[in-house]
Length: 354
Image 1: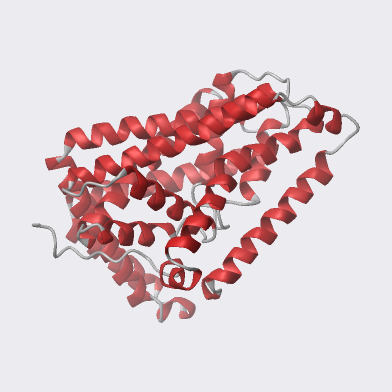
Image 2: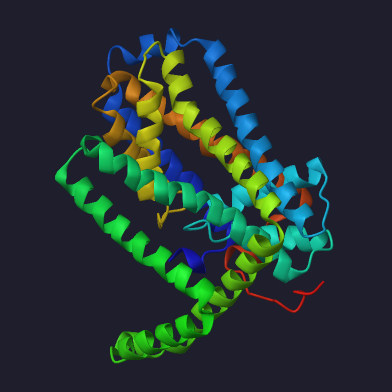
């Protein structure tokens, strides 16, 4: 449904959806002690949360600069900031972050980077995040299965873990044997084309996945064979980004005069983001708040849980979206975003030897 919407309607949908979620959270958690908790909120910790938001942005900017410079394009801090904020905005209003990546490739192209290399930067940036989430989530649950609050979550986690394992094995296969991987995909999709509702979509699926395999193979070879030091630097930035982001909930809890062990806060968020990574809703809205509620409900009094969730989402998502929206309006205009919001990255590898 969301793909047919204009960018203006996407924004309106995101805002309306977010407001509804916030109202539902407040209605479910508001109690006699909630207002007292708000009045006793320690503002010093809110400023620390703001500092963590700035630190998140800094590591994200630094990661982009390192990856771009590795392929011969030097980005200024200001331009990198504008690119990341615009990416955050468009990712938030499109399902599964699909709109932000083509925009980031475009921003890199504006600074003289070929589309193939720009795509590589975006792919490696995404893989670094997925790597930590894909490894961290299952590893934590293996040792702390009690973090999953009920049987339904255990089954969902196992399903996502199995899917991600198959996906990682396929990615490795595609990196080392791209042509064989394309043939395997084509055979599977031709079998599925026996179903009437998939028949007309099969050629498009094959073209999309073949392009994705070529893009992935090119990106991995380009960076891991020629730019290992840059990958190391970008990995350190990813670790810094995760630490700043995952510390947010802990700091807000301290501001609300409540303590939860920092290690447990980190573990819960690794598991939560593992389950959220393929969220179909714009910016993960609704699913993120619901998951956070379920995971933290056993640890935090209900009367502060709603305030915690709202502040957590504000600093981790909404503040970046607000700033990104301002960048989009000033630098591009809403109408120019139409092309990016409905686009997927198209692999263009003719600049491979630049």
